[in-house]
Amino acid sequence: MEQEIKSVVVDAGNTRIKVGLFQNNDLQEVHAFSNNELDKLKSYLLKHKNYLGIISSVRSDKNTKWIKGLLPNAILFNHQLDVPLVNHYESPQTLGVDRLANAIAVANISDKNALIIDVGTCIKYDFVRYPKMYEGGSISPGIELRYKAMHEFTGKLPLIEDRIQGPFIGKNTLDAMRSGVMNGMHLEMVGFIEEYRRLYPELTIFLTGGDSQHFELGNKYGIFADENLTLKGLLIALLHAQTTFSSSI
Image (cartoon, rainbow, N blue to C red; front, side, top):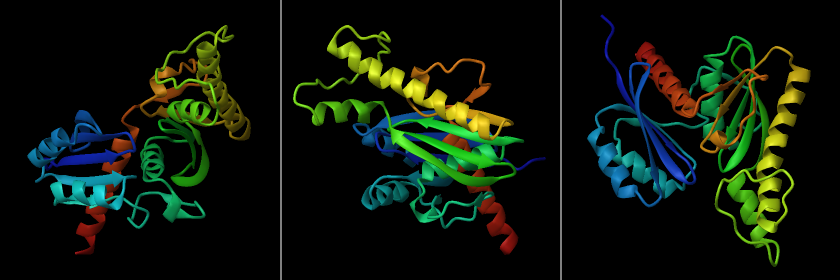
């Protein structure tokens, strides 16, 4: 009979902290906590403090230490951790932990070359060469960063905080800005997909990230959408670390 393993996986991003509970390899529940919900996060993590755990954080050392204190059995996910992936990035210590986690997930799913598009605070494009080799990718500003840049670096453009698509040809300033951001990001993603497919015709595409839901890339690209890709990659890294540790004893 398979041993039941319960794990808690934490993905602490810039704007929210996402927590997944796993039973063996099955994702049982997912909760996202905003920066205004840290008390709720604390209560939730303390309920699962005895679980096996892993924490991925792009937050300050102080905030990461606070999360780690709530989960004494958790390990920190970073570039020094032994992972089931060959990392060809020239500066692995600067590679975002979310990008690495996504690559681990895809490397263990895809049976061909893969492109990951993660739409969040930034848009991250990451290429995983089959079998299980991370090669690198690209980073560009996400929705919120683009709107903030237009507002803060001009004298009169307003700050937009919604995710409305708007018309392609904007007939007022708000719709013109929405068209530039939302349609601009859509066309950017399509352009990256087309170029990767030209370079690597046998390509699987994975779409993830909190803002990915606002973009319809169509069926012609054969895209796999998975909003929990990062959590799944972190679980794979956790179980791999546990297996490695057990075999070394």
